[in-house]
Length: 363
Image (cartoon, rainbow, N blue to C red; front, side, top):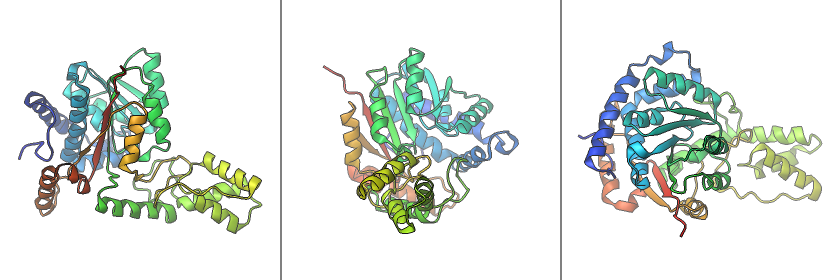
């Protein structure tokens, strides 16, 4: 079985071979790292060990993202400056460096991840050309201040956590390069019933039971999101009744602290609460705005892309076919084959999807 048999390769044979060789090289380097012996944070150690456990699939998924973005951009590898947005431990960025992109920029909003990713990449001899810590606005400032252009921005399992998608895409449309290509992969595939069931289960847990410490960052609350909103409202307006606080906490589900303040102020001033526009069980950490696997309609993504000057296409992802449990490796290749066979309808089976677009050239 070939390294990329799980999905349709959008690039030619020479580029495919280049990616395969890069994957083999970086896999060897990453498996050789004893992460427990390093000085990186416990948070990054947990994530990196998880990557090591499913490294082949992770590299396949990262290659899928990079190949599609590269093909969409129309640029040669040596011509393209690429950003791994919300890069975490930096595996995708390291693969991009190994493949030989002209310039690789690592970016993450979490300063701990930025520092740890640089240390891990140094051990793998695959350091990005630059590390930018901050949100999309910090990334835009980096390119403007350094008088550089950006060709490609990619991410894996990030877009479903971004609080203000409208603001995010508006900022993307302001990047210096008029040919910018974006590709965001997300496991929050609203068209896959199994994914939706699993995601809603996670959302309900975070809303009413709270988070375990397994994957949490130090800035993430471990309390139920509902409880956190109650505390925010109580601190702001301690004279409200428990019933009023509970009502406001319910109606502000999916809002960050600053927006909760606005709703509470309006309630005190006018005695009414604007009905929440948050769909289904979607919810976020009210302290950070980090969505709990935000389930967004495909049409909404399409609208965001096109309204901000990008064309839009969805591509279907694939399942891991390299589990330690052999029986799973009988089922998942068949599922991957079916996803490929049914074309666009494969979205109803795909465990993740890729949202890709390029800036529409102005005439």
